Length: 205
Image (cartoon, rainbow, N blue to C red; front, top):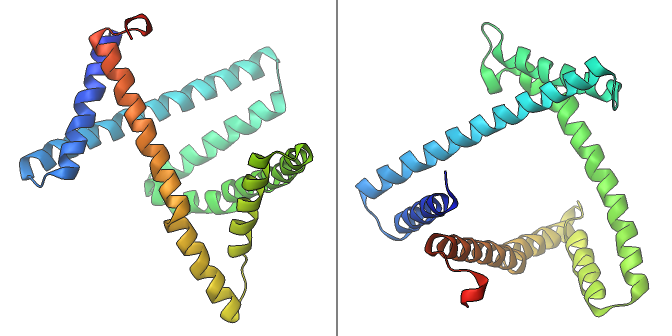
């Protein structure tokens, strides 16, 4: 599929979703549901293809004894364990208790450990940023400290006040910045798609 065709599809689908958000119409809502379902199916297919590619690559690493064979074997065991737990006869798929146990006992602790390491590396990055004494670094670190303080798990009146403050920060300033990023990304994506569709290059500006 050529790039202009892909850009046209992206623009049409984006306009359809935007119209469904702004206009109340049953036919439009039905068409949007079909588009969203198709996107979910495509994403699921891409995820399955990614898992298959990962399993194939790690199996090749084990077979040819290259890279980290222990890590490759652990990845293959993890993939096989989740597939067996969710697809065995009588299993309930992603809602099966065995799958939930694997997530609670293995995946979530591993993710928490990674986030713990990320916290340590973030502190090191903040220290290096403050060492430069730039205004932007001071603002970023100060904002991070404010958010961290408001998320402290305290009880009593102080905890209630911090919970209220954190909710306001997430819904107000942080949410506004996040929505601004999303709107900006959407505008840039639509602009690039339109330029590609119309064949407008940088030399035509």
